Image (cartoon, rainbow, N blue to C red):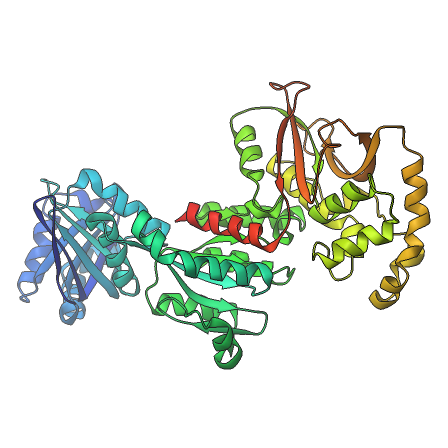
Length: 520
């Protein structure tokens, strides 16, 4: 492979990759620390004119690894087997292994004191050196790697050492409103981010539920037409294989679907070297065992999973709660209006002299609700968001344990969407009665509330319609904003309040984009 050389801070630094080599592992017991063993190894190889590139002694003196030319590998192994035949018979040597699927990456002019940055970058990209060697001066670092990792390792180390623009390779799943908006935001920001942050965002794959398009370099602005006309059926393995085949580093998978099936791919993607970003709430609200399995995979692979938009769209809510919890702050209660659509509906219904069905239709025309608004009014979306926050506090609650007030009466739940939409006025009497039962100066809010002893394994999770004073924090909410009150021991009765736009493709996509940049 070609030598790559560049001058940095006045010092000549080179990265050289050699892939026509093999690793010979001589493995045995403590005899490897005895005087004369190295002499015997080099003597046996010298008799056959075999040169050793370098040698690394294994931990606890139980193994020696040496790199030789690939063409000499079998000959070298035969020479060592002959030399150590007696030790084989005694069980003091138990294997001499040959691995030809390796490469040597040598970095000259690199100070060992700062090479840990490159090493960390390799590990983050699921590249683990088989052997590491450095000179006593610390100015020459040599790594033995899997041959399949060599090109990607060279790119990663070059970025760290030479300050090359770091490339972030992104696969985006889901091309609905949020996914499409995110892709456009990234494409429109690529040049600016590269100039300001020295980060190159590269969308190499876009996929919907049926088809995907791939491009080693960033997809074009005509990606919609390309996906429609040139997209191919795919398996999730095809995405990972494409990234591996093209030596793509710094991988991020973005889930903008609402699919309970797609989240089953998370662990595979994490194990394949992807960090995860998601606007899909389902992965964090399935059974607690699955939730833990994702966290175990993340810890094992040293990957991150960001999902700030799961609750409150682009509001900095999950981060705030996670940081409070991590700092040792005792959170005693969380309450808020979690749904932008239900926020709009009850903010307006509470103060306007209009039937509930009219307000609901307004929200539908504005695109604030699902096509079937029962998906919003049943409370399940609020329940999922509440559960996500509970699990940020290490609570082990399940969805089935949340008390959810469904705002749709049972006789309307089984109707077809078309029949339900034709009979929205049936809702008016029930909500009029609820509105009129309030005390004077109060308004209706549909809230999620986490309470109980949150230092235990489970809390009390409730989703319900409540009446609050109009001059209260929740009572003053306007439009389709979401609002969250976080009560802690330090804040006492005065909660930390986070409020802002809690719905919409634009703010959600921007929040996902923010998570991508945080990983980058």
